[in-house]
Image 1 (cartoon, one colour):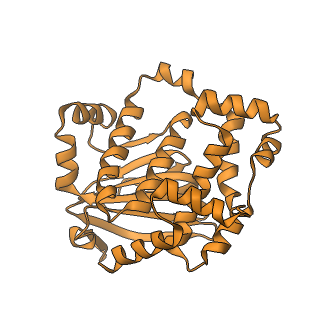
Image 2: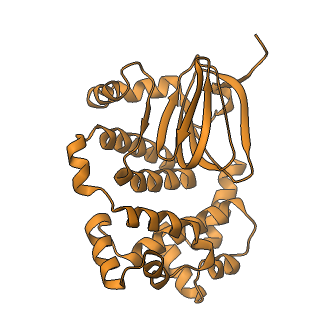
Amino acid sequence: MDKVVTVQLEDIRPFRYILHRIRTHNGWSFPRHRHNRVFEFYYLFEGSLTHVLDDGEHPAKTGDFFSVGEEEYHRLYGRVFGFYNLILPVEDWDAFLSQPELGNAYRNLAPGGGLNLNVPPSKRARLMNGLDELFLYQKTPYGDLLLQKVLTTLIADLSEPQEKHTVHTLPGWLESLLEESRERLDSGLTTKEMAGICKRSPEHLARSFKRYLQTTPSSWLNDQKLKRACLLLEHSNTPVLDIALSLGYGNLNYFYKLFSKQYGMPPGEYRKSLSRIHQE
């Protein structure tokens, strides 16, 4: 057998887990590899890719959530997609499933131990919000708490009886609007433009957000923009002023006020705190 890459426990220590976010429009692949003492999850939030296991190729589409066990060999490739990849120690995953309710629920979803299903559209926004937040706070004590929250919420949502999904399912136009709005955050998107994108009146949009998302369009949009600001603060050297302007905040003081209220510190201090965490 050809030599393969091994993803092992030492690759994520001293942290309790690693969460990767991969997004490309130019093609990407990861070579055939196996795991040693780690368990892995993938959530494909955009596009499609091919997951290759020893038993053949498995096409994956938007909304697919699947796991890869400790001894499995696999590789991935595709051209236009975005996914989250969560890697955690096998012993931590086993400890999580030792909780009776969670363990039983997971075994019902994955009788053979491996999870491979499509997240209902009505549940994707909440899962993405949880993963986005976990990505921002990983390698921190708060991130460790968020990991438990994300996994518990995921299992609870996927275990919900199917007939209940129809009550909360987002309309197709609203699901499309949320996806397109996330794509256009860096262009200074406004709620008025959101109404134009979906060809609904501002009043209709407000009623729909309240009914299906329990929030307002402006609150949702600000929340998404602030999360994007966090990603830019962590993964780029873009000045705070340029980040605020790119997200449509012409008033820097207002941006500082919103950010500080959401994250407990100004943007500059947030960037410094992340830098200290990474150095440690």
